[in-house]
Length: 138
Image 1: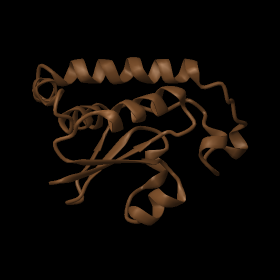
Image 2: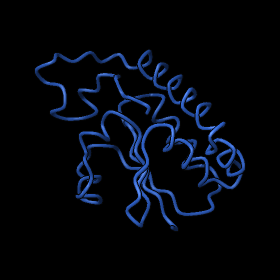
Image 3: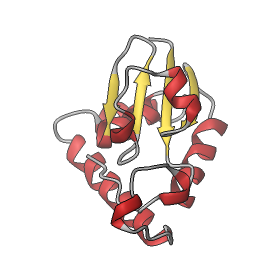
């Protein structure tokens, strides 16, 4: 594997900040961040369940691997030069619960930062304009 595509919530301040942080890191493999549910994401990854990528962070490897939730956060760290060792520790049976707790904490922060509240009737019909702040970290 030599490339990752990170699908993130472009309408969420926390997700957008994480995207900026991730892109600015020195990488050990190519990392591209694409807004989840966007036309670009659908064109780049037509086989993916794009509705699911709107609920939680998703990372796709160039070999077709898909990671979601806590695993996706760990893979993002694994792609960076500075944080690969941490990712390896978090990927273990003892570390993954810590990564999952961090993902849940991030999702809680995301929900508190997301101010858009969308009527049930229109949820899922678009993306950034109808973000409901209810992503599920895994």
